[in-house]
Length: 93
Image (cartoon, rainbow, N blue to C red; front, side, top):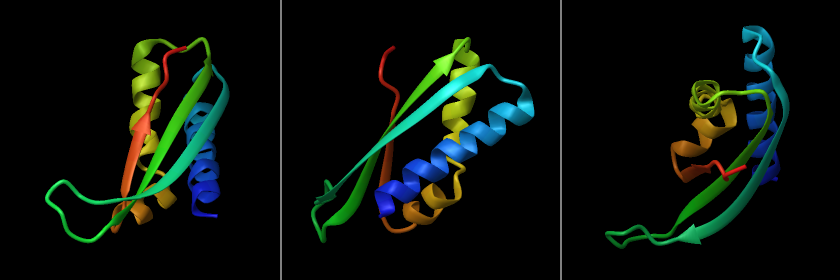
């Protein structure tokens, strides 16, 4: 359920931002995976959420970079970051 919440919140956040700023975001798709991992220094395992954000539309590199920055401000992401790792990937088109 957390993966679904992170994906949905991310896509809604990006859609609202793009609409407000008039960005030509035609479609956004977010895939989220979850794993328990041991931190590099050892210690207790932590949750790692990996999200892949796919964007479609006539977006230049600057617009895409801003959207990825905004994705980090999604409320679910910010909540999960307090006790988990959230990694964002942007696959090549």
